[in-house]
Image (tube, helix red, strand yellow):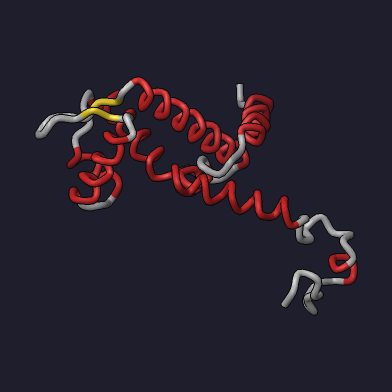
Length: 162
């Protein structure tokens, strides 16, 4: 089916471009998918760095075994990611020792944590239960633009209970 073929499942208004949910222009559509692909590339890295930062803050150390347990993955998987994070200059590590964030890693962890917190608090402000909000925020934080985050924060501020 070409770009110009009409779907029989679309209403007349959608086929005529009168619907806000119709397909966006091709270039814009491609940019939307590119944005998602780029977010997926950094999502796992950000999750690891954020967790390492949280463990350092709340436990005083970030061990591979703790990361594996909290992420529900094998220690071998964590070891591979630690090597990658080390190559990217986000963590430093020594065998049988805790992990430490570099300055760049610390900045990434703080940014990721702030994004996560905004999405989490926004979902709670909408009335989403805590369990669901925590699960949803974990994925959403990586795919939300800074503009949308600012609007979410404004909504949180306006709807905060005294």
